[in-house]
Length: 385
Image (cartoon, rainbow, N blue to C red):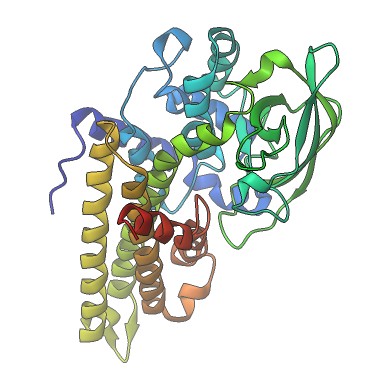
C-alpha cells in the first residue's frame, strides 16, 4: 500500500539516516546493549548529523522544521535495523517541546545551542517511587529560598530515561502544597544542572528490554536551583505536561507500528531460509497465513499512524486521537511480534536475533506514556461515557 504521508525531503532524510545507522550504529550495537548506554560521543555524532536540531529554530542553531515526520523517519529506520539511538528520543521528542514552548529568550539562547550539538543531553523527571502515573501525588518539593534567589530541591524520581548521561534534567516538583479542590496545582518544572551539589544518579535500572537506553533513579538532597532555571510559570506544570502528551503518544504509536513492520520483515526472511522436514518454513500454509494476518495488521496500524501524523503536523491531533492511535498500535504490535517470534521457533527466544529484542522492547509501549488502561479511559471520556 503506497504511503503518501512523506515527501521527497523526508525520503532523502531517510536515506541519510539509513546510511548513518549502517555505519555508526549496527557495528557497535551489541556493545552498547551490553553497556546499557550509548557512548557520549555518539550523541555528538547525532548532533553533527542534525538529528537534535530538526525542530529547533534556526536562530538557535537548528533546522527550523515544524514537521514531526522527520522524527518518524528516524524511528522507522531504527526499527528496520533492529537498533535504537539510546535515550536520545527523550531529548528531542519529550524535552524539546517544553524548552520551545515555555523557555524564556535567555533560556533558549543558553540551552538550545548545546542541545542541538549534543554537548548538553537532557531528560525529564516526572515519575516517583510509589506514585507511578499519579503525577498529582508527587512528593518531590522545591522551596523558594528566603532571599528569592533559588529553589531548594528535595525528593526522588525513578524510571528516568536518559538519566545516567543527562547534563540537565527537567524535574517536576511541588513548589506549593496541593489545593484541597485541585491536587494538580502547585507543581513546577525546574531545569536542573546535574552537576549541582546534592544531585545524585542512583541505580542504572535493569530492564526487560531497551537495553541500549539508560534508565536511572535520581535523588535530590538540598539541591539549589537558581530561579532563572524555572521553566514557565510557577505552579503551572501539570497543564504543561498535558499539552505535550499527544505528541509523546504519537511517537510511541509510530514506534510500535515500525517495530511490528520490522518483525514481519525479520520473520519473512527467516522462514525463507529455515528448513524443517526438508522444506522451507515459508512453504507451509500456516506460515503464509500467519504472516498474511500480520501484514494486514501492520497495514491497518500504518494507516492509523499516517493519519495521526498528518493531523499532528496540521495542529489537529487531539488527546483522544493520540490515545486511540497509541492503544491500537501498541496492542496490535504485541500480537504481531509474538506471532513473528513463534515462526522463529527456538531461535526467536535467543537475544542474538533481532526478533527477540523487538519482543522485549515493544512490551513497554503499552505502559509508558500512559498505560493502555489510561488510554481506554481517555477514549471513553471523549465518547461521553
